[in-house]
Amino acid sequence: MRRFHLPILIVLLSAIGLGVFAYKVSALGMPLQPDATAETWLVEARVRYQPTGGAASVELRIPHRLPNFSILDEGFVSRGYGLNTLAQAEDRLAHWTTRQPRGEQVLYYRATLYRDGNDRSESDYPGPVAVPDWTEPYRSAADALIDDVRSRSSNIQSFASVLVNDLANAAPSSNAAVFIESDDDRASRTETLIELLATARIPARQVTALRLIDGRRDIEPQTWLEVHNTRRWVPIDPETGEIEYPSDVVVWAHGDAPLLEITNGENAEVRFAVSRGVQDALATIQRFGDTLDTRILDFSTLNLPLGTQNTYRVLLMVPLGAMIIVFLRNVIGIQTFGTFMPVLIALSFRETLLLAGIILFTLIVSLGLVVRFYLEHLRLLLVPRLAAVVSVVIMLMLGISILSHQLGFERALALSLFPMVILAMTIERMSVVWEEHGPADAITQGIGSLVVAAAAYGLMANRQLEHLLFVFPELLLVLLAVTLLLGRYTGYRLTELFRFGRIQDAMRRTD
Image 1 (tube, rainbow, N blue to C red):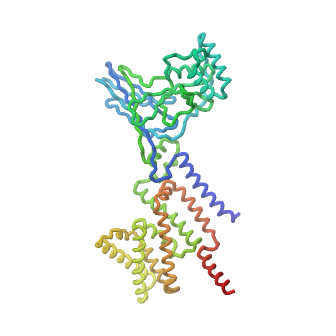
Image 2: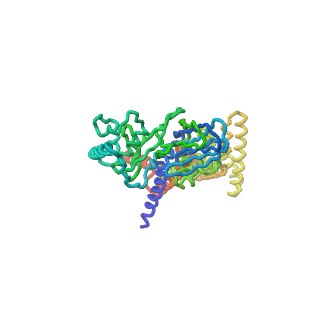
Image 3: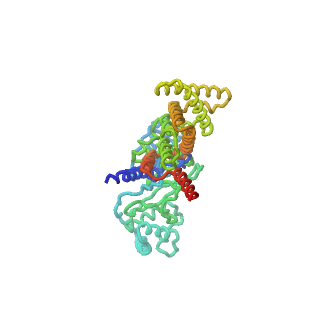
């Protein structure tokens, strides 16, 4: 069982990390690209009326649970009015009150909507509805029409769709023509359909919706039909019979109650305007997460203070750099001074940029080596020698920064970000290797450290990877699993294969 411990741990870490990542992407819609944008819609309802004297009361039905859309933000503009919002079955009611309004009154309700793709249409089955009390000849025509539609449909929603098409294309002598009036509009056609569906004991209701057209300032509300198929409310266009709402239609209210009701007012009207907007996807998802019944975003890096976020944008890249070093050392076989020195140098390269960073690093280490060889003649103990090297490194960094500033080479001012202790340890380690194994090994390991640091910088400076690890820190579990997997690698390194290959070639030539 002990030999399966590590594989099980690797699979478990990968499953948790990828599972949380998939949930954030699919359920919450968190963006995979750092510059991703999200489409939002600002919908404004403008109420206008003329007071007739006395205290006025204005009631406007406003959305609550929208199929396919979420309300990211909303606001009310109503100076001099008291405001309450009352929850109803599927909608809400904005209730404005004022004591002595004078002159024409204008009130506003604004909502910012985001399309999230969640239909929110599931609900308990209300049960079969009562059959309307038709009079003749409507009763006979309704029964015959219902029987004919039932024979040409397979379920509730197809029944409703066939019924809509029969009314839309009714022949003058057909049973459907009995229910058609010459001045029918969408609202009256929907009312007729609801009564006919009730004859078949199918629950149906009227819905008020808006078509999202960018820049329109006078959008007429549309009436839609919804039928319950025992699991959810299914929307159907009352004119064409098409099922489901188009992507540019948003539900505003349910039922046949008027959108606007005013007490002590006349000439009342409500008009709708729509404007499309584009916002940062990450900020939009944060606001969208506040509307969901989930706590996962409460523990997100996005909720940290801004300064702390900027710090972790850098720190979260360190495990990626460490994994790259493990791969390059254990699989490729590149020799370096230490394990974490290339990662820290790669972090410094993020500020100095690669070419300038390599030049500055090489200059500091070369000058430091000269000082280190001089200190060797003084026969100092290890700790005082390291302290002296650190002091010299800092003085060298200061001198190079002052000189580069005078020469106008401002990029070298970022030299202060190099970890001076790591530089001192690198100089000490390189001098020891130089003395024990010769300058060739020391220079080889120094070049290997720069190569690994440059490779780690190439990944750690990638904005796409930085975005993924910051927004989806659970991917660190996947990096940990890969690192653990590489930790069990005991095969030949790539550089060893080349070296052994040359030995084999030499042996063949000898034979």
